[in-house]
Image (cartoon, rainbow, N blue to C red):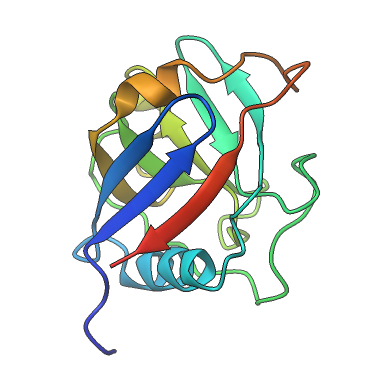
Length: 152
């Protein structure tokens, strides 16, 4: 596998940039997928369709509904012991462990019940206040969106 990007920047319409340290040491396949989709423009304009206070903000569905993913095949799980705490970025999936594709979530708070069951691929290093500012709801009446997403 070629050298993977180390940083993902999500420019959100809620006010600014969210900088995420990519954790290829934990989930190289997922980092490669997220970075590749970001740099193809897949996430540009995509909304956070599920934002639950005290839990997480979920996005990455091209339909904005939580019902779909990219055209690429689903990913094999890369579960780790990395805890789901505030600022952790992890993959959304169905009840099938190897069903993650393009949807992801950012934890607002500790969510230890997700540990070892969802693939952690990054952690917010700055701009968490812009995640906190996303409109809440399932779905939000006016969902917040990713203006651009780029990995370097």
